[in-house]
Length: 409
Image 1 (cartoon, helix red, strand yellow):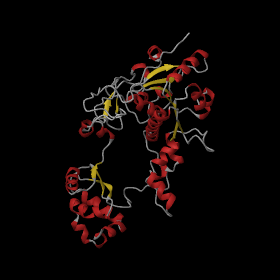
Image 2 (cartoon, one colour):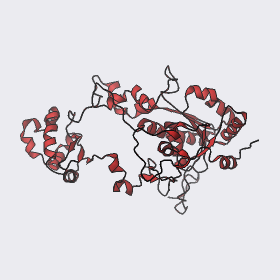
Image 3 (tube, rainbow, N blue to C red):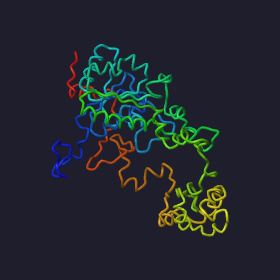
Image 4 (tube, one colour):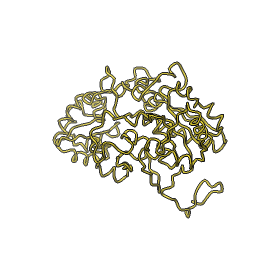
């Protein structure tokens, strides 16, 4: 592609440095704790931005956090450098750390200089803490009018619940998500793994990029907000649409044994492994019948048509449980794929971390401290993601002060 006059596209002859990220030269002050805000700064750092993590004397509490889902370390010392936990390193890779007490005049001056030199500020402190530390957008824009300010919160920056403290699970709870995820309509269910935190941080990262694009046109700083509640609503877009626009919408989860559609379900094969099938509409019916080899079931008048099968989904589930148990998972997946049916294996996470297909796509990476984790949520051609582990607390003070031209004393 030929280079455009505005320089927006490189010519084919322009070499790309695989180690120079698209955000190289961008300076970010990251004042986040726990997961959601930290993930947004991490993604900026993954793409080459210089992200300075400002921490209090005790450090981000995530440093000492052991996830309740964690087992024993594999191939990594129990105490990785600086006492960094798996949770911290996973969400703060490729950043640098400096400890500042904003109640100290000297440290506040350092912080103010960092803000004056920064392109982006990101925080997910509570509203009360943001006011106390004077790190709200009005104060920061007074120091640097072109600064992009990004704030992650629990339930949003406005409204009667704006000051409520919230966590991964409680944000999903407010959005109704614990019922849509639950297989029991009468009981809520919360998934493990801080999923809503991670997604919220990813969306906030996207908002930061949008704000930077607009700043490039206007020269003015923007303010980006995101919340756990907003994320949980967004990830339920189709279900929210059903609830808001139709009467009697069925938005709660269903157990595998009582599916709405027996062809959108999971089945255990004869070798003990599970398969997932998603023949979602009538167009997929003939392909499913052929691939699953269930022509004999169509002799039952209840299953003679797609509409009949839907009306008797529970009975079809029972029949398919028995049928799929007659052959291995590999057999059924091969047959279903051959006929163009959407299907796949149902893995445990232990299967995923050593899966050859995942490895072929570089979806996992190993950090400099030996921790294995997920790489970027997208792939950028010709770019090698950096893999520095979460920083040692205050371990980068001197290099940050030097590189950012901060005056002290």
